[in-house]
Length: 120
Image 1 (cartoon, rainbow, N blue to C red):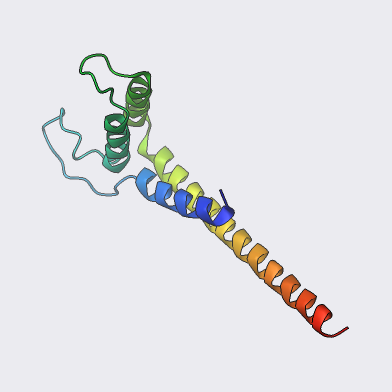
Image 2: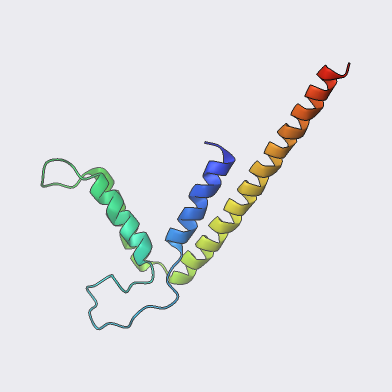
């Protein structure tokens, strides 16, 4: 995977990991729809459905790991996810800049090489 592709994935992950700044107050404690990390929890839920076994019954080992991760999300302070999201965003930008500089350097080298071949 190239640096530019990884940069795009990290940017998307930073959006998923970023907690909501404002949530509706609700007396229903069983509902997660108002949780600040609802986007991350929904992503874990979607992955869990993707790895669900075809036969109904016992969850797969992947599903059990994803449930563990969801429990960790629920028990982790939201400040941690805000910081994580910012760091992922910074790293994505750095990778994008690095990929851009490498691409431009290859372009310059190619032009110099072509000029050297054409003009002996």
